[in-house]
Amino acid sequence: MGWVFRRGDDGTIDWLCQPFEVGLLESLASQLVELYEPPVWSDDPLERWANEQDAEPLDRTDPAIRRLFPDAYDDTDEASDHRRLVEGEQRSARAAEAEVVRAAVSSLAEQAHPMIRIPLAQQLVWLKVLNAMRLALGSRLGIHDEADAEAIEGLEDDDPRRAV
Image 1: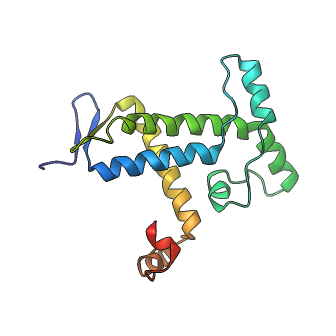
Image 2: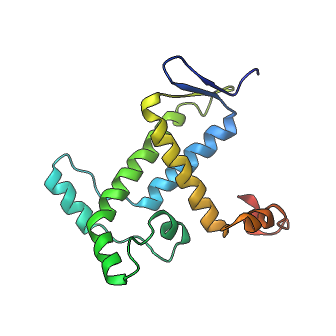
C-alpha cells in the first residue's frame, strides 16, 4: 500500500482505508443520527418548522449532548428560548450531515481494500461530522484536557471505557 490519502486534481480526497475503519465510521455516523433524534422531515417548510418546534427536547444530562449543543447564553431562560428556536433545525442539519458520511461508507463495508472518495463539495461536511464524533466520544469518556487523554491511555483492562 503506497498511499492512504491522496488529493485529486479536482480537490477530491481519496482515502484507502481498512475495512474496520469503514465499519467504525458507519457505526459512529449512525449513532450520531440517533443521538440527534432529528425531527420528522417534510418538504413543506411550514410543516418542517412545526415538526422542529414539536420535537422532544434533547437529554441535557448526556455529556455528549451538552458538548455538541452548548447553551448559547448563561441565563437559563435565554438559553432555553434559544434552544426552542434553533435546536430542531440544528438537529436536522447535523443528522443530514452524518447521513452523508454514513451513506458514503455503507456500500464499502464488504470490500477488502475500501477506498472512500470525498468530493470537494462534501469535505466541510466530513470535517463537521468527524469533529462531532470526536467531541461526543471525548465527552462521554470524560476527556476534557491533555491529562485526561493521557489517563485514558493507561486504563485497566476491566475499565468499560477501554473498549472505546
